[in-house]
Image (cartoon, rainbow, N blue to C red; front, side, top):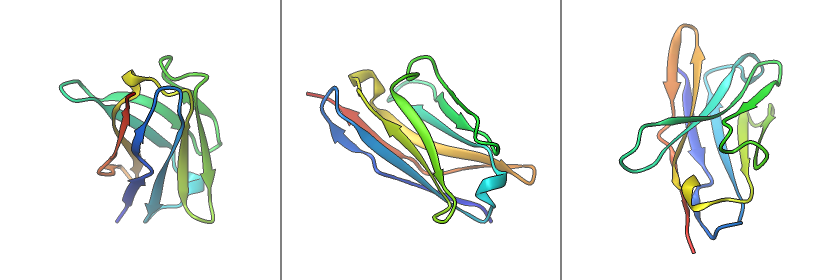
Length: 115
């Protein structure tokens, strides 16, 4: 059974940085495409970023140039580095993957950007 656990959220001032982690178990990270989404209160969930099995990354235009993705195979963890944070980045961030025909989600971690 695949399990995804996010961590690293918190409160930060505008212009600050956070690094979110998505610890994945029950799969082989090097074979998985991992995605990050976010959902602000009262809004629909938005796609944020993707890292494919071959390491290709893609980002929502709203975060391009500010967010980066990386992976640590030894820890089976994907990281979302978020820099130059803006108040509109505030949301619950969740990671997701498709594995053996099923889609899995973590429970998310809350990011609040406020002065």
